Each structure stands twice: as C-alpha cells, then as structure tokens.
Amino acid sequence: MYAIIRSGGKQTRVSKGYVIDVELLNDVEDEVTFTPLLVVSDEGAVITSRDELASMQVRARVVGNVKGRKVEVFKYKNKSGYRRRKGHRQQHTRLEITHVGAIS
Image 1 (spheres, rainbow, N blue to C red):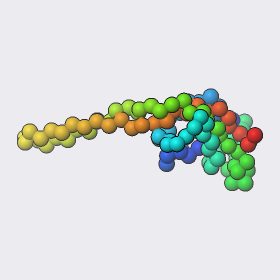
Image 2 (image 1 turned 120 degrees about the horizontal axis):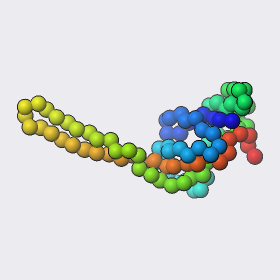
Image 3 (image 1 turned 180 degrees about the vertical axis):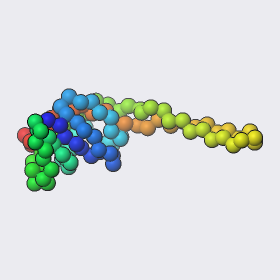
Image 4 (image 1 turned 90 degrees about the vertical axis):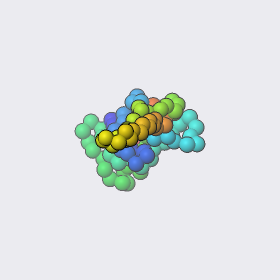
C-alpha cells in the first residue's frame, strides 16, 4: 500500500517504513499526521474519491532536522573581473512513515 501526500508544496509517494525529507516543519512534536491524501493504492486498487480519502491517513515519526545538499550560486561577468560566490543549505525535517491506511 502506498500513498501520495502533500507537504511544503510538493507531492511525495510514501509507504510504510520510508524515510523522507520534507521542508522544515516548525512546532512539531514526535509524530506528524497527513490527512489530505491525494491517492492511496492497495494491491492495484486506486482510491481517489474524497469521501474515501477522508477516512485515510498517513502517520510519520519525526527523526530530526537535517540540512539539504549545498546549492552554490556563482555570478561572473566576462573581462571585468566580477566574480561573486554564495552558498545555501536548506533546512529539512526527516520523517519515518509508520502508518499508511485507514484511521485507527
């Protein structure tokens, strides 16, 4: 069984036991619940009805906060000696999916 969840403006396919990185979630305790599922599949049966999806949820345990890969920005202008260099590492929250399915 897998589900497609929405977090931080992005959609992610998850299943029980997956470890994913999502954009930084502020003010979270030990567990996060994603209720607005987009699609849940069970042995080939695809559920897209909003009524059925309202009774489904994805629960995830917060593992911790991590930094993403470094993004380097380099500006250069030819023949003028202009060079600027910057770097940035985005903060992410690492989640481990513990439950995918009906609300229990």
